[in-house]
Amino acid sequence: MLPLAASGSAALADASSADDHPVVRYLDSVYPLSAEGKRALAEMPMQLATLKPDEPIVREGDRPTRCCALLEGFACSFKITGEGKRQIIAYHLPGDVPDVQSLHLTVLDNSVATLTAARVGFIQHEAMRELCRRHPEMTDAFWRATLIAGSIFREWVTNVGGRDAYGRLAHLLCEALVRMRAVGLAEDHACKLPLTQGEIADACGITTVHVNRTLQELRGDGLIELKGNTLVALDWHGLKRAGDFDPTYLHLREEMKGAAD
Amino acid sequence: MLPLAASGSAALADASSADDHPVVRYLDSVYPLSAEGKRALAEMPMQLATLKPDEPIVREGDRPTRCCALLEGFACSFKITGEGKRQIIAYHLPGDVPDVQSLHLTVLDNSVATLTAARVGFIQHEAMRELCRRHPEMTDAFWRATLIAGSIFREWVTNVGGRDAYGRLAHLLCEALVRMRAVGLAEDHACKLPLTQGEIADACGITTVHVNRTLQELRGDGLIELKGNTLVALDWHGLKRAGDFDPTYLHLREEMKGAAD
DNA sequence: CGTTTGGTTGAAATGTGTCAAACTTTGTGG
DNA sequence: CCACAAAGTTTGACACATTTCAACCAAACG
Image (cartoon, rainbow over all chains, first blue to last red; front, top):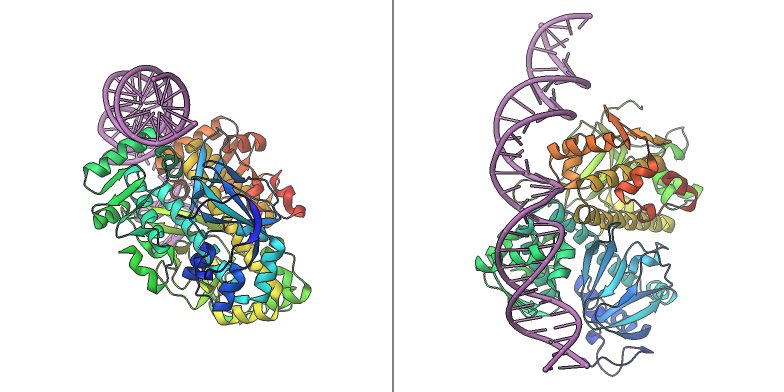
């Protein structure tokens, strides 16, 4: 793991290849980039920040002048309902830019916070626009990334609206595994799951207590092993079946489809 | 109501002003268009079709070569879960293009069907791309419309995941009223609600029976009147409170914010 | 080592689902 | 225009999934 350096303002591109840049790696997996595109992206000036777990990044109602790229660690988008319940609406992996839409929608309609210790890079909207102007492929790449995020929202509506607790959890775990694999953070059918049961609960729209009981069911059925933040799908096909999981909605590129097997 | 003409292939722009075109009207409400932009949009060649209620338009898994513009009537996007449940993930009003994302994502991840009798226009992807090339403002307008749709998905995740049946229904009705008003299909706090209780149920992730009972609660609390497809918010502020409704997520333009009062 | 955070358990309360029937409205064809 | 069929709404009794609350346990941590 990279050391979590102190805050500062710098481009992330040093001697190392642009492919080491998490945003480059993710975006390239979504929409193949040219060498120049990658370099330009990696050389974007951004203000680096190191964050602790559970730290806010941006808040609902903000009118940001910059985007936030997640470089290392995990984060989530969420809303707080009137009764004070937190609904997690998306998980973010390294390379994600959770608030790209702030380029076009002035006021943020959800908050973003870290789940784990994280390193983020803030990129001025103007720099972003300049990049897209100079390298039209970047526009397409961000477009596609945004559309995929939208597709995931649709699937989440289906998940919380249409499946019971058992199915929701199974589906969530399937998605976690596939997305982790797609960015190289999982091997075979095991990965880190940097979530407490409470955070899983807030994403699935059920209680912590019920998450706990339902996870035990999944374990009892021999589908998963989950202890100390490590998730293993003992029976991948069974888990997919339980979660009614069809990875189409992730719109993986042909070469990455293997991540879903 | 316009007569539902037989299918055919034609531009919709005749002698009448471009502003009569539903897509022009909606897109302009999202992102103000120039006169030329409006004209170009209204003159887009499209294949017209007249559809009955509950007719499929496109299906999950399709790889469309054209987009579908809803010209008249109402439609919805949905997915079918493994247990055969239908989860409605979005309602579409006249002027919507429910599957714009098919321009960038080859395979559709949800189905679209009519709710009422409807008139739709199919537009070849190539024509769409040509339009955006010639009139960059159209790219921005469709972008913004897509982002707003994404924002609505986020709110729906919150709605089905974070609120009980009473709140979900209240929220849904608030959204319906505001969106209807924004496109001129509602006056004051009344509008047509072209949905059966079953269709409301499929959107909220609850049962038809429970929708029925909960609607009675809303009526009993003096919040709404709802009979024969006509919805009236008797107590708009009470309904907003009940649904924990904050219209920020609809990203209405300043001039349209009145639709939410 | 004590303190905190997250996980686990049990019993009772409750919201929502299920099933089956009756009722009402809408639409249609004779 | 009526009569009938079809579709949508309403009701009741009961089953069940999920919540609530409270307590206890285990692991992580300074």
